[in-house]
Length: 220
Image 1 (cartoon, rainbow, N blue to C red):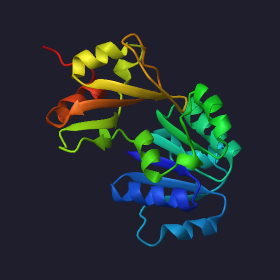
Image 2 (tube, rainbow, N blue to C red):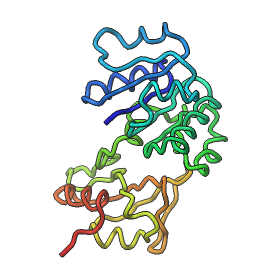
Image 3 (cartoon, helix red, strand yellow):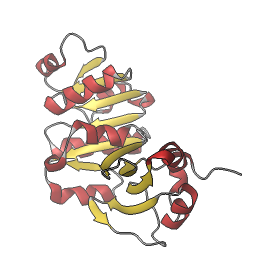
């Protein structure tokens, strides 16, 4: 995958390193060329000096072929502008913006831009939103046989009820996170774009649950 990152501070440089080590093609943008020193000599990606929401800069970073875009600069306005350009102008599917003011996060979520407030931020959380990584455990019972995990949800489930997802996968939906808020579901709750699904399932059925959440119901 080709991934473009805006901001080469501590957050952006750490994220760029993780993705580079995983073998992805990475381009990182920052207005300050000295910020790229944080990347070190082992970084094999591309560095671009410029304004992150400027189209010429983004095109130099390969935004036209990008699979994901993460805006993690120090400015809320720059992050959301760049994220909207990536999503709306270039059609990048996986976009996330870091927001310092958590009160604004819900507004941006409603614009279709997943946001992560700095209070709860980690490189792992950003990666969960730009790379489909299956299920990430949040809790396990003492025996290790039952897991509560955030599971990546494929586009085929959007607009369907949680009951259909439970019946197809055998997992139980514990809750979803929508617009940054936890929401208890019932059988008629309809899944929306941007929902983060937290589900309970047995460890022996993990592969099947991840596959169905990602690709849809299995055909008989």
